[in-house]
Image (cartoon, rainbow, N blue to C red; front, side, top):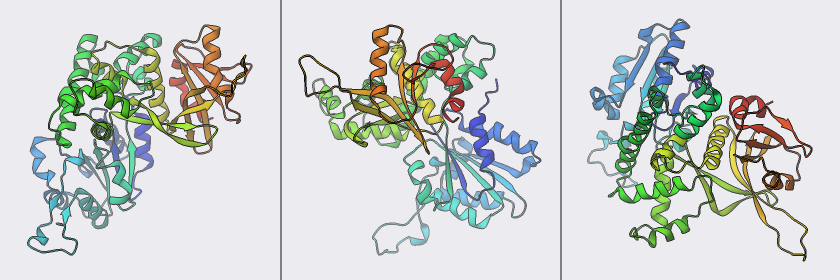
Length: 440
């Protein structure tokens, strides 16, 4: 089964030979290696690049463990890369190349008192200077070592391509001929981890998703962050999974743990666990934005999983909250389309009898911004009843600016405007034509 990842492939093609290191980041098993080989590799060959000019090194391969030392990696590259003629270098899981002490400073006392280290950043930066004919592409699964450091440690010569699990459009294209209503329901439950599609039996698919957490994500998080026990972070991750789409307060989570046997889990520990999950690309944070005051609000935030199937696997597929899961899918789709996303908060003023000086603060699920584009978006799995529709529209109608307002409903219908100027669209239609709907 070949799964098209044209969105990311086209990003690679546009960035070819631009003098920068292309860093493909994302959660493990989301398809980063597959994007480079075979998808991008096949493209290069079709354009006339000889196969011997495409060099691939997989640092997760047991036979390449010595190359996880940056000094050995540097020697390998010097010996393998041509001095003339264009070449393309792929390095998988670059974060496995760990920093080592600079041997040239052995026994030397430095002014800072710190031991100088050699990192993969130094190796790749040097490569750009010594081999201007080589176009470099690397993949990595740790945002702590990559995303935040691309502009600094790569000295402005790195660009990030953030990859995610399959979007619904990609999922549907890989299940050609499927009923899209059923495909949507399956996607909501099982998500879009590419390898999971190989399992036609849904029980096998569930087992695969559970095993990903046990054998890949938890293992990576515990080892990478030197956690002494895995029990606490497992319990915390389940708490966050249960509250997807709900406003979450770290202090309240800490209070919850203090009332149980996990009394050693305080706010600092929970903040650290959130960071660990974010660094592994499992979890993303959405801050609250005061629409009228135009500022980010402290306190409650929302957390979303990079994939609903992984979230459901954590909870053993026992909490199928379709409304919040749909909200999670829409959040991921907006990020995939390149939008910055916050949760909106706005006070609505309503006539009351007797009169009251207070006004309820209502939530706008998403404020999505990109360049000069801005959208206010509500997610409503079911809004068929008139009273429910009124409640969903209230926060949108309270916004006084002229940016578009969209109500996404858990159904399958084309977009239309209502009498209040709000765009209504079914979630399936939104996910299949989101870029044309938003970027028009």
